Length: 147
Image 1 (cartoon, rainbow, N blue to C red):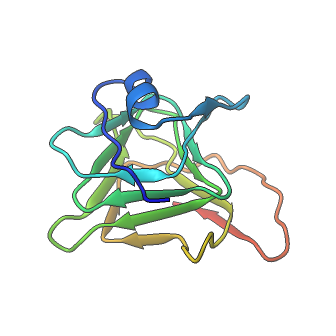
Image 2 (image 1 turned 120 degrees about the vertical axis):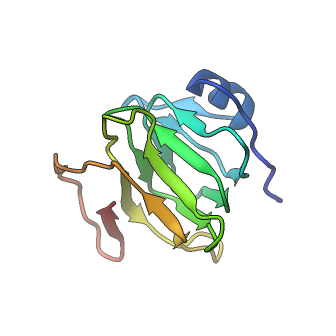
């Protein structure tokens, strides 16, 4: 199954309804992302809630994309995150608010899926604050961590 470009503008409500088809809100409050492609565009992608790439799903971000997250939100990767930034067009993950931080990225039990592994090429992560550690179960053969 080929990846489809994902396009959205404005708030997470539009991201959920237009950009990321077949999403579901988890009891934890995180929006669950399905596999797809997030291309670069002139406007940043705005996430007002935490989002999760579930096990078995691949989320690909193209060079030059800008993703901004509201304070106290995070990107949780349990599936696969493939970020294809380049030297000339890095991918930026940042806070939407200049004077506030977001919670960053968490890789939890993330592993290869259909030959794809997590890949972060030419990525800038700024204003991420993981100062409140979380205790997560560790299973043999898996890895985890945060940025």
